[in-house]
Image 1 (cartoon, one colour):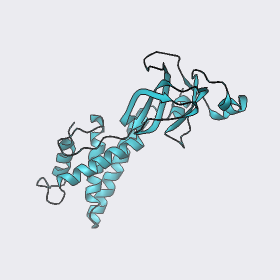
Image 2 (spheres, helix red, strand yellow; image 1 turned 135 degrees about the vertical axis):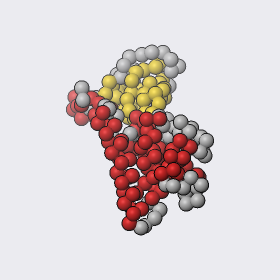
Image 3 (cartoon, helix red, strand yellow; image 1 turned 30 degrees about the horizontal axis):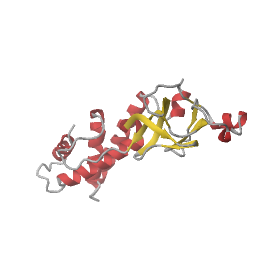
Image 4 (tube, helix red, strand yellow; image 1 turned 90 degrees about the vertical axis):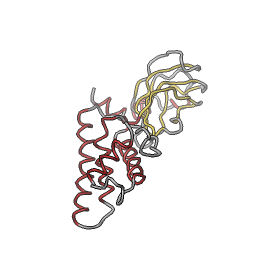
Amino acid sequence: MKASIVTDAAAEILQDTAGVAWSPAQLVAWLNEAQRAVAVLRPDASSVTGNVDLTAGTKQSLPAGGIRLLAVIRNTGADGSTIGGAIRLVERASLDDYTPDWHSADPGVAVEYIYDEKFPTVFWVNPPSAGGVKVEASYAVTPADCADVNAAIALDDIYQPALLEWVLYRSYARFSDERSVGRASTHRSTFFDLLGIKEQADFKTSPKRREQLK
C-alpha cells in the first residue's frame, strides 16, 4: 500500500485536495509518525523473524533496529541454518530460586530464555551461551519511513484505518479553535480504539502474556 492511499484519503476528508493548508509532505510526516505509534502499541504490527547472534554469557541483545522481543523460538547453530532444540520462556524468579548460580553455569545450548518487559531489547538464555551461535527469534522493528507519497507503507494494509485516524488527528491538532480541537480528540480516540479492539481479538504480543493465556 502506497502512502498516497492514506494521504489522499486524509486530504479529501480535510477538504484540502490541493494541499494548501496541509501539504503532502506534512501528511507523509504524520503518516510516518503514525507507523511508529502503531509499532509501539502493537509490536507485532512491525515484526520480523530471523536469526539473532548470541554472545558469550546469559545476557543477549536484539539486532540493531529491534525495539521489542516477541519470542525466542529455537537454536539454529553457528551457521544459522542448523535446526536445533526449542527454547522455552521461563520466569526469572523461579530460575533464581532453584538455580541461583545459573548465570555462572557451564556454557551450553540454550534451552530456556528469560524476558523482562522493563528491558524490551534484551533477554537472557540458560544455560549461558559460549558465543558464536545463533537462535531464531521474533522481534518488533522500527517501521521504515515513507520518503514521499509514492513510497510503500511498512505496515500491513489492515492498519490503514488507524494510520488515517492518526494523520487526521495531527492535522486538526494544528489549530486551536474549538471545532478543530474536538475533531482532533475524536480522531485520536478512534486511533486508539481501533488498535484496542484489534488487540482484544489477537493474542497479546508479550512473551509473558502469551504464556499466561495458555
